[in-house]
Picture 1 (cartoon, rainbow, N blue to C red):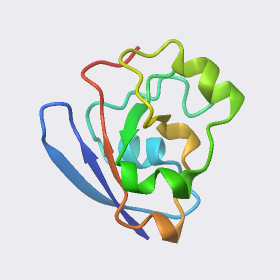
Picture 2 (tube, helix red, strand yellow; picture 1 turned 180 degrees about the vertical axis):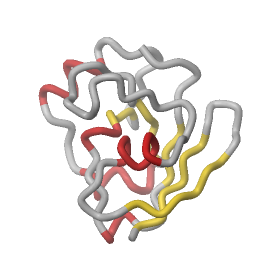
Picture 3 (cartoon, rainbow, N blue to C red; picture 1 turned 180 degrees about the horizontal axis):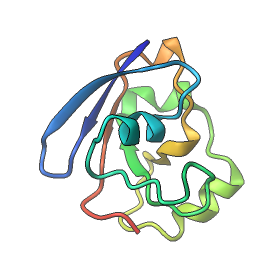
Length: 106
């Protein structure tokens, strides 16, 4: 299991254990974390799972795929550390990952 910390826009933090192989989005939805909608169910088709990844973790995640780049064009307040959490697969190396949700989802 990997411990992921989800921080709501208002600063409320939720720390949960997420099974490796699961997406960061699925970890939030399955644990009732507010702020990540995942309307498309993780199919990389909606951008309602937009998060900001803590800068220290960006290198472990690698580059965004072209489809993720395209969908982030529909998200609000996109930043260099923006990712779609449905595209982040949890691995043991991501134990301790911190993601912050934007004020609103698209």
